[in-house]
Length: 134
Image (cartoon, rainbow, N blue to C red; front, side, top):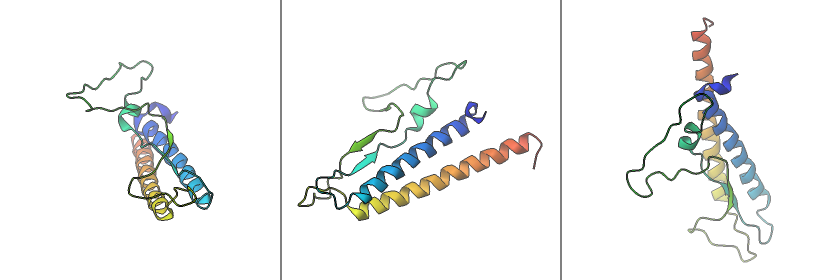
């Protein structure tokens, strides 16, 4: 029912992406001592690709790039990638998990999830007010 309203659709997609990222980061932490384990992460959420996704019955929205590389719009799906920041080195056993880095990323996910939850709650309150409820 609420998927037809953009604020709920986009916020829901953001919350699902954050939950998937939290899962991947937890797997990294669980494998911090596993030899040759490569730290993974989820590509960032793309607001533009979610917003511009074709909706039935609505005209297609298109952004125009003014210079090369201006709009690097990914597919919008959560994409898990193995990799690592260049500033950290690999352990002698081949493991690339840095626990401090993973904890900082998890804190970022928690803050972003709290913000998405707040947006969802405010949207619900606005919808209730518009419907004449309290």
